[in-house]
Amino acid sequence: MPTEMPMTDVMKMVLEAEEQSSHLLEDAEAEAAKIGDEARRQAHELVQKLQHETAEQAHAIVETARSEAHEERKRQLDEATHEIESTVGLDDAALQSLTEALLRCVSGTA
Image (cartoon, helix red, strand yellow):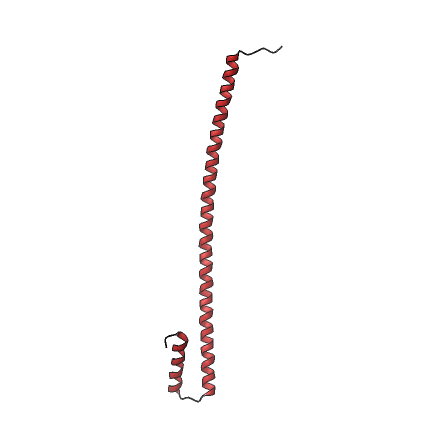
């Protein structure tokens, strides 16, 4: 036959259990907040890293395009100069003057 506990002991055990569960809940909420803060910090660092990498890639693409455009412009200028030289018989001074004029036109300083 089980022995019965006095009502005050039962009430005391219930209150202790409630207090213990309250502390466990507070601890769990504090840990969840720390985990959330750390996740936000890591996400922020990752976004910054990806933005930096993307900016570097964009810069490299722009520089490559700029270099390719410069090379294409030079190639077209050389081609035009060769075509003019082969089509028109010019002396060296006239050829130099024409080449300089072409350079000014291509570079936009004319």
